[in-house]
Amino acid sequence: MTANILDGLVLGLQYGLLAAGLTLVYGLGGVLNLAYGQMAVVSAMVVAFAMEAGIPAVPAVILGLIGGGLFGLVLDSTLLRPVYRLQGEARVLLSLLLSLGVAFIVDGFLNWRFPLKALSLTITGGPVEVLGVPMRRGSMWASAIALATFGGLFAFFRFTALGKAVRSVIEDEEGAKLVGIDPRRILRLILILSGVLAALVAVTQSMSRPVNVAAGFSITVFAIIVTVVGGLGSAPGAFLAGIILGIVSSIAASSIGTFLSLVILLAVAALTILLRPAGLLGVRE
Amino acid sequence: MLEVRGFSAGYQGNDVVRDISFHVEKGEAVMIIGSNGAGKTTLFRAMCGLAPASAGEVLFKGDDIAGLPAQRIVRRGLGFVPAERHLFPRMTVQDHLSLGAYPKRPDEETMKIVLDLFPRLAERRRQHAGTMSGGEQQMLAMGRALMSRPRLLVLDEPTTGLSPKLAHEAYAALDVLKRDGLTILVAEQQVPLAMAYSDRGYVLENGVITLEGTSEALAADPRVRSAYLGVT
Image (cartoon, rainbow over all chains, first blue to last red; front, top):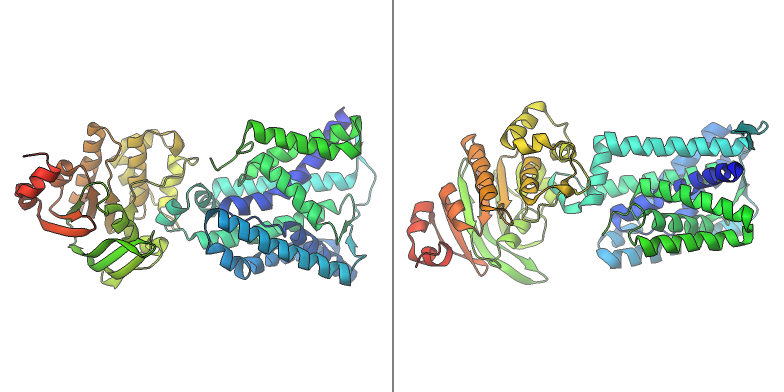
């Protein structure tokens, strides 16, 4: 049981990290970015190519994070421009369609040019013992990075003026304008941040299994599930939902079988929405 | 300080307010009175950049600000407290006041002025705006707008939903601000209070300004008396 819960925590931290970038962009700008997984994959490819070119792992990862951020910036300043002119539901729908287009194009291109490319960051060294359970070193690193990222996000939103400005836009866009905040600039910043988070997802996942060029859609799908359960627009919600779903899915996988764990995951997600339509820590009414 | 000329605004081609002209001099308190639906909110929202304007000029400190986005107008020193307040429900009083000074850091002196003006806010610095009463929220909206040290404060129906006692408190606070030299423009439905407080006023009816004058002259006008003061 302890082993299941620990595995669940490891998985849950990954889920939480997965959803953070997606949920912030949705909560802030009403933009559903279905190319989120592709942001992660492209960043993973940047890291893989950089390492192939002889760049050491850490600088290569930093390049990948920059790549993810640039992807976000490019989306913001090109494809999302017409999206921002719309409001409410129309904005969600157009962003969904356009980003799905980006996802298809990126997937198609990568599959055509680099079908066998994958990123796997091997962490050397034997298992680490936690509460008597041997845990893989890669998982420990991935969890530590996820925790540090959440800690950083928490500090950013709670203690910095810019972080509070971001929250104010999520809470009430007109109110934010009335204190002199430009919501468009905040949204651009969050898209860049979302790209960096997507890159972190790819990097941490590649520490326990290879991230190949086709991984994009499954990353997006899991990110959506966790986002919905956690509450749209809530980073703490993503964290909480990630942990819960991670533990559920790990216990389900070991006691019932891996093939059913995804179904159980979806059932738990559906149940959460039935009980709390806004998600665990939802922002919108 | 503020001069509005031939200003029109509305929704989807239908102007709700038409050809509005008025002015506010430095240090004055000016009211715009009108019944519900007269167009006060449309006028203020368009003037302050939250809604599109269709014609006319809004000269603030000599520059035309018509059509600028709200965040740019605010940074030029025009503070706006809308009727719906637009607070941040899950953020604290302290957060609101710090954000009011955005992008600058909130300076202690302004913070002290605001908290002296609204002692209730000082007692509730850690409380979330969403859990506060209507009166406290109004004070917070005013306090947030004041944190940027505006030259002109524009308030849309600051007493809506407040008890008579709190409405008086809100105007008492405005009176302090006025005596400290702040220029104030207020739209109001509760006319007697606004009239006792302001120097001059305009009457807005069905989207156009129909009357103007000093508060005394308006208070003596038989049309104003019957329509807004309940005197027959």
